[in-house]
Image (tube, rainbow, N blue to C red; front, side, top):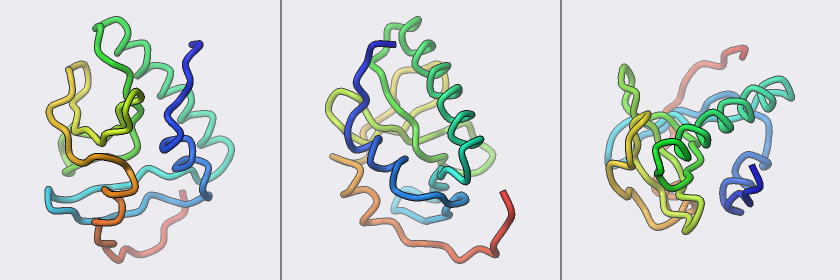
Length: 120
């Protein structure tokens, strides 16, 4: 796609292998998407390419998702690829609003929610 991905999201997905991490924020529940293995990585890349193509077709700025929001909704959190802002989005639409200035600031204000281990 001839696009450089924002360094925050590159660092996020290259940090470690893990299952989804459940957290709470001021805005509500947040499930941090993590990569469990290389097959997961391949699936993520495919999904990110589809997301980027949809953004390009709808003439919206490129974002890269990293978390889902409230259960039973299609809301997700992403990083604006241009400036690193954390955004709340819904598929096929322009971002709904900015949630934080950058990923590190956002992650630092999350509270982990203990969940039993699962096999992914």
